[in-house]
Image (cartoon, rainbow, N blue to C red; front, side, top):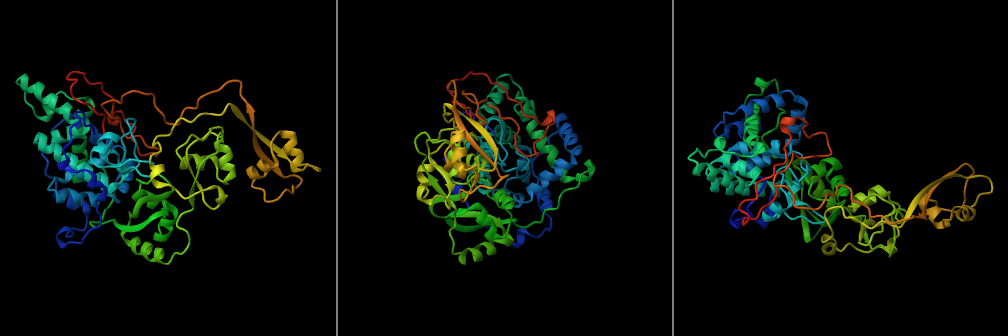
Length: 494
């Protein structure tokens, strides 16, 4: 999606997108059909588009039944909610299928232009439509909030252009791109419908791709496919949770796996779920909601095992990891840092609360919310790390090893999690020492990009799973647009 003219009408939704309540009332009129697919088919109301592109995409999906099955399996968690919201607004149910071509229903999908979530919002458009993004949470991945925002935006675009295919084209390429294409055709005396417009290649494929999905859902047997069955009832509901609780504990209290919990609550970016408010909302499978509420009421231990730690001047990430008994990889992933032991960290870190409690303090939610969302470039120490492995021999002591390798006894104990100074012959100790480098270097963040304005176009959602498509027919290419009409503010996709 792209909003390339900077306009935004608050009447189409805003910050209240965050506060949307996703619980359902079971109304007889909504649950007459057993299969959600029957309900979706009954709501199809967009005119079919006759395009050579459609057949190309039908063949692509038909030749990849495993991919289609995985995509539909992921959609089970979210599709009922989206269909209900689409119907509430009187929109055609084809719109509920849009995440299939945006993200494959992967809530953690991330494109190279930083579009995120099942609806693929870029940061700027997400903020325009009330989707908060900070150190603790990225609401572009919040299934209910992002659905609310996406439907708000699509309704706005339909009001602007008066046709769903043009609204969808604008959702993909930006309303300014579509408006300019219409104006060009109008001045040339040409038709101004979707198929006659000169649009970027990705956008010319966009509506036909949705048409291909629609055709497959309508008659899957024509393509040799079988649809994963989805019941016509809610998969999840909303529960109220304390303002601070670990994701792992929340999953345990609900009786579900952490993977299932994260799939329903992908907007939380840290292992501790935390808010400045008195409580927060979580999504849980309908059958697990009562488990969570009942188990939480009887739980009398700490709800979180994470505290905040302010590194000392010049303190390295590897030293901090050893001090708190956490791997360098878990510590760096938890805090959006490059997993480099030599990084000198200056900002507060999340660390386990159960170790070295005298050095930690309660989490300052508001202050840490201001920390960078992107993995920052931290200054690397002017020394390099040397890994050492030593097999204990007769007569070895911690003091002798410390003197031999130029490292303190305490560091050897911390890095090997030793509870006493006694060593056993044959025991293997592994530790690291720092040696001065000949020159200073600056570390580059994992996933960082070169500076500059992002492209107007987004590329296909790139995920760390195997759900992204590899066919050239489904790769979304970056298109450079003319810089005419420079008075209009441009935004990158989603």
